[in-house]
Image (cartoon, rainbow, N blue to C red; front, side, top):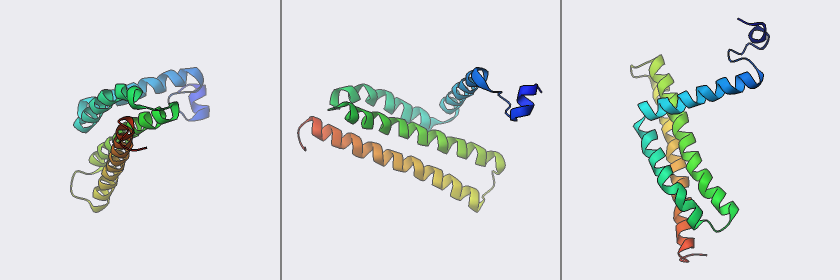
Length: 133
C-alpha cells in the first residue's frame, strides 16, 4: 500500500488519479448494469428514445431540465435498485424478511421514478399540443 493510500484509507487514492479510477469504476458499473439487468436495458432504451423528443416538446430551458432529469432519475433509481439487489443476493439467497423488504423498497424507488417520469412527460406532451396550459 502506498503512503498516500495509507493516509487516506482510500483504495483509489486521491486527487486526479482518484478521479480517473472512479470514472473507470463508474463505467464498469454501467457495463454491469447493461449486462446483468434487463430492467436497466429497457429503461435505458426508453430514455434514449425519449431524450430527443425532450428538445422538441420543452417550452423553456427549465422545462427541458425537468424532462431531462425525469429520465436521469429513472436510470438513477434503477441503478440503486440493481446494486441493492446484487448485494442482497450476495448476502443471502434464501427467503429472508429483511432482505425481501430491502428489495421491495428498492423496487418502490423505481416505481416512484416511473410515476414521476410518466406525469412529467404526459403533462409536457399535453402542453405541447395545447391541450392544457
